[in-house]
Amino acid sequence: MEPGSHRIAYLDCFAGVSGDMFVGALLDAGLVLADLERELRGLGLGGFRLSHTHVDKCGLRASYFQVFLGAHSDEKEQTDELAGPGVAHDHDHDHAHGRSFAEIRALITDSALRESVKARALRIFTRLAEAEAHVHGTDPEHAQFHEVGMLDAIVDIVSAAIGIELLDIEHVVCSPLHVGSGFVNMAHGVYPIPAPATARLLLGAPTYSTAARGELVTPTGAAIVAALVQEFGPQPSMVVETIGHGAGTKNRDFPNVLRMMLGTLSAPHTPVAPHTPVAPHTPVAPHTPVAPRTPVAPRTPHPEQHAAPQTAAGYHEGAAVVIEANIDDMNPQWYDVLFERLLAAGALDVLLIPAQMKKQRPGILLQVLAHPDSVDALTVIIFAESSTIGVRTYPVMRRMLQRETRTVSTRFGPLRVKVASLGDRVVNVAPEFEDCRIAARTHGVAVKVVHAAAAAAAAESKE
Image (cartoon, rainbow, N blue to C red):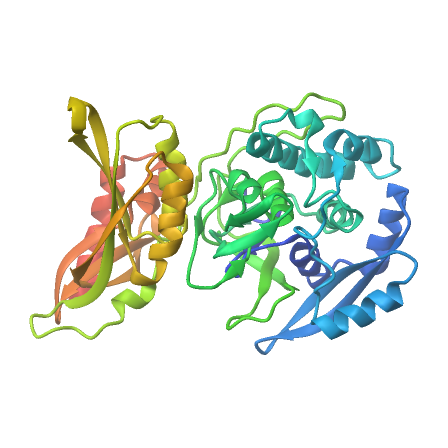
């Protein structure tokens, strides 16, 4: 894309994303509620009304979007006020009964919505159908949306499709997604975060978890991201025209908002090819996640581990726990999912070590390095995603160099480098490979040329 030629939206998901947060961010960025209501009438559904208010999230003013259902919306508002802001809205896990993908597709296809809005909304629901079908072992065509099949979630998704259209957004880039931690109650039971459908929808997207408890990315939010985002990574070079903040329902130690930046590119940019919209009544094709094409923020689980004061020798120490399991009867294809979930849940490192097991069978020693606070959550994942029936744990002490990430200027643009220090002495400088890879592709040179330029710039910055 050339500078100024496309209207671009950048999603900053430091607090995750949900359907109401996404629509709230659109409203805060300039979408007019009356225009949204007018377009929604084309859906041909009644029994709901919309609300757009402003709330405070840790001192940040944000737009709070709600869908009120039924004829007694005043009573529902009173219940919401007693329970806390937004409790009644984002119902991703509140309903045991839903609608099938076929029903929702017919509803949207037969509506009076704009054709471009129909295609966008169907693409979102198609991603949901694929994820739900995979999780429950069913056909996508007959997937039941227990968590996202109700009217308010349908309004969220169609509103998101309308907002993208009315704000003329042509390209969407998304940051790594903060997914939260812990467990969530769903129609089929209690599941670890991210919920199974959410985790499936986020395949191919950079995600991370911190000590923040609760579900930060909902199935609706994940489906919107899976269907509408063309690429993931840091904010591209762009001229920001407006910023929208969409409020989530809970109050946290950090602003529980989705930040959306709208503007145009200020430098040449080669985007990932967009997803092809799914035509109405077309059989659902398996979703192939697009590999990230822009630099991904370094994964830093439990950043507090690097805050300990340095020892007399110049490094610092931190307690950790090793979780181990011997495995000799597991489908090798499952390790990919196991790795993904452990890293997303905050594992410091995951190793698969070849081993000779009893009865002379070749096997694997699974070894997970964990922060003490995450041992229980990681152990649950190991039991859920592997064939082992027992693990062992033992404490260890990590000795680590002080580290920081710096950005240096090169003829290939700004590049990140990781700098490791022993006391006051820098002992290792490593350019961020993903930055070098993308810059090399953009400028048509070898990766090692970009790598050398970044290392040289880092050396000059120390002098």
